[in-house]
Amino acid sequence: MTGKRLSRRQRALAEQKRRERRRWLRASGIAALVVVVLGGLYWSGNRPRTTDSVVPAGADRNAWGLARAPVVIEEWSDFG
View 1 (spheres, one colour):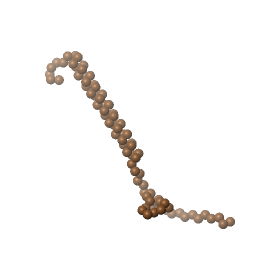
View 2: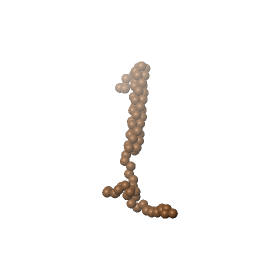
View 3: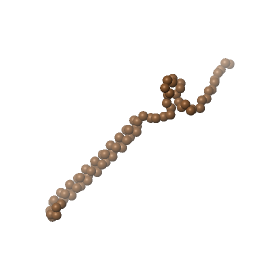
View 4: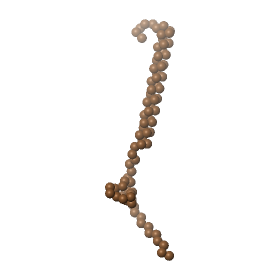
C-alpha cells in the first residue's frame, strides 16, 4: 500500500479482496464469452440463406432453378 507495514489481518483481507476480484473478473469473462458464442450461433442460424436458385422476376413456379442448368426432356407414352 503506501509503505506502511500491514498487520496480518489487513494482509489477509487485502489478499481476500484480490481473490474475490479475480474470481469476479473470471466469471464475468466466462459469461461474456458464453454470450458472444450463443449470439454467434443464433445469428448464423437465423441469417437468410443465399443460393443460386432464385426465381426470376415474373416467372411462374415452373421456372425455378439455375438458369445454366442442363435441360433434359424425356417423353413417356403408352398407346398400346
